[in-house]
Length: 629
Picture 1: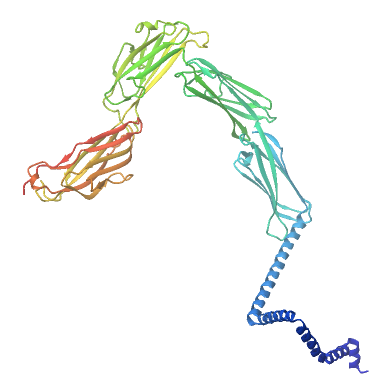
Picture 2 (picture 1 turned 90 degrees about the vertical axis):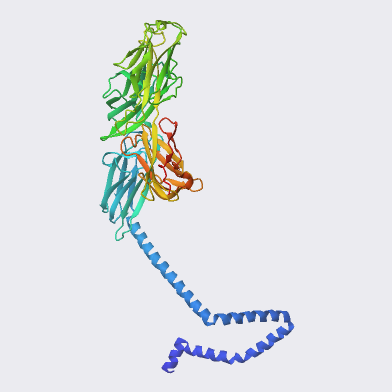
């Protein structure tokens, strides 16, 4: 056997060829199969037709798939497929690499702990513990604490809403521990969530990995509790007591606690125990845990019946050198109907508005509302206001010009000697107002006249804790402002002057506004051009905050709207002024007569101080005699 034959036998090449020849010999049998198939077709015609139809479809599909277009689309799809596969492989490789790097450094401890419940204002600590138990280095490690609203960091973190602590590199086996001091100050929303993050870079990567812990803390009440008490109702002038008590409910020693009182304007402070640290409303002390302080304040309020006031107490605490507000309490008290009533009414109208040169008649009524006889009552009414003409005083009381006070006692008003139960009476006096506003500077505005009255008796009913029985009342009268507008027309050097019949002559009309004492709003100025006069469209103004005067050709009305004119504009400094040009050509019937140019000017506005409407104006304008042509 040759080497070639041997190889063929060994590798089966000869068998392959022989089998191929045998298969070729069997090929002539195929026609016989076709004959049998044709016989089957003739015996089953419906089946054969269906087979033929599907055979035709198959042929069409083969034609389509073998077409050049289909082959190109198929090739393009294959390219897309392999690109997607490649992208997935690359992404998987990166993800696997990132995952492998993370897994290499995942063995670490990150803990953020804090108490679940604290008192508002009581410092607490967030304790951070990090341990690198992996075999790799953690680079650029960072602790990030997000501080929510109502929570403050203490010490060097007091002005931050985010605490960032750069740890740097943590080698294998390294650890990091640190505590951060914070405090909750928001008692309205006591439940707080604080997010703490730890981030780092694994070896050979510039993408940070991050871990988060959320700490939930609840502050149910302030560390320094505050209570405030005051009587619900007091008599005018009666001495009463306000008590503020505050206690350190925590175990923290506060180096500085400040109590601050806010009194109503009418409150008259008398004394307190302990004495104030400063002024008459501030007490400062240190407060170790569990300590309680009490402050007792005595004073009085002078005011009309049925008026209510608020007294407020505020607590401030100092944490690491910085002061924070912690709590506030409010007590409401009112003035009960006074045992001695008093009322003051100007010109029979509590809302009376006076103007320069007016006379104001004050009616002062009084009465005893107690069940006791009140002896030796005295009435005093003090007047104040630069518009009072003090020399014009009229009345049966004694006027003390040193204190500007009108006084009545039993010598002027016998009924005051013994005021029996339910007794009533009335006294009166009057002043005139000055005829000229006392304006010296732009800010001299919104003048008013005050009359502050008091009736008192040394007789004190048993239920009043005071050295006298007092009733008070007051009246304030506003002084209304004044606005002036003047108008004049001048020859504008265009056309004949004096004017001539049938020849146009132009005039320049000026409107000038001065405003006294009060601000005016919604100022509107109107006038009508007279027959024969026309608007040229030339108009100017020396204020740029509002538009220029406008002209309505159909009604021949000139109007100017100004939103606001400040007090004393034109009295101090330049007045507001506008100019507009008009033209007129006299007719033959107007020869040797005065020629009307503009109707009377009307100005309306609203006084911002008194609320009263303002109505004023200026006279009509006319030309000089017209010369016949």
